[in-house]
Length: 459
Image 1 (cartoon, rainbow, N blue to C red):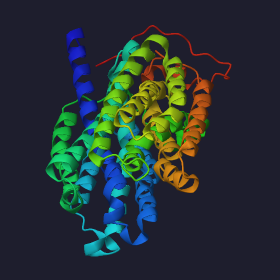
Image 2 (image 1 turned 180 degrees about the vertical axis):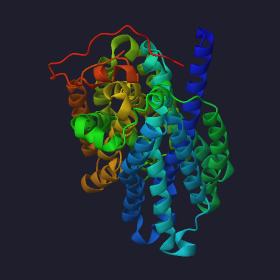
Image 3 (image 1 turned 45 degrees about the vertical axis):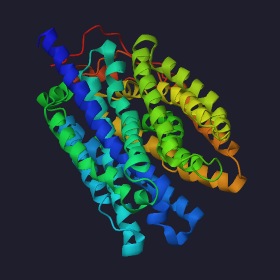
Image 4 (image 1 turned 30 degrees about the vertical axis):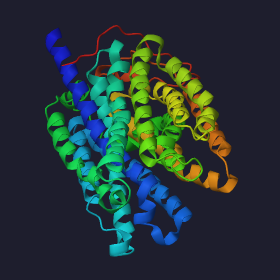
């Protein structure tokens, strides 16, 4: 394949991964945003205002418990039949679940069956999200030259803040322009869910047009697909999965303060008193900052290494944990924007290098399973119930300092975890060097990976 053709293919892959991931996470965040704003009233009304809000946030978290199932299924079949097929399947599953939520009856019209159906569809979203991320990052990273993996891996990563930006932007449009006040509660909240069907059609055709990962093509040609990828992964790399999950947990816990609906709910509630639309616009702005620093972190990780970029990110995240809520609690809208700015910087810097770091941790034969399951477990440990925990802490203490301490603790855990792994930037990801990839990924492992200047094939 010519250099020009190779670059053209890499651009197609980058576009397909960012479009597909944006659609997936738009669907996921639309639920989280609605959970913080209206689901307590629409689906959990009999529980009362406080308990209803806790139940609403708990329904956000319940999907995380099913992410490992999605990761196991997508990892198993992604390592056996390919990355691309699983990406198309997860996209369709997420879109169908999200669209159906837009048609659900509320508790007032259907009784207890309404929250039950809501939870079942949220579980389907969790299964889809569990399989989505691993396939998207592998398509991006395995197509990329070894000196550009950080930047290539940042494209599916920026799909997450793009999805948040789109979700909060559409919701802000509905609350502030199209269906303000009671109209949003009556019917406006449904529109962002129903829009998912349009996005899914676009994402489906974009993803179908992309070539399969060159690494998986080599695996298939050599007939090296493992019979039981999950069993092999945990038998040989179980500890690495746990450490990789802990690396993500701190960033995910912090991210779900905003994306899981806690900040929109808290800042628009009686404690602070901002208008709902103003808060959604501030979160949308924060998503834009998060996006920019996520891409910057991918670029930096190619220049200064994955671990050093993580250290910068977690350091910035630690510094923001207390000022975030101090600024929000002033009740000043400009301070809310400043709070979202400083918070988003650390989020992006600690999220951008993750795709490349994870991909370089695991051998080719179990890579889809390894990155997917690590990500899903990290999401459970970090973001699954972060909004619920934060809400409970505020209700118990009457303030936000306990929430900040919780975020500090989670960030420190991830900082220690990333310090334990070796930076393997530039390692050969192809099946040809499976033996090199099997060498320990931990800094305390005495073995070292042999250097290799052979470029990764992109066709």
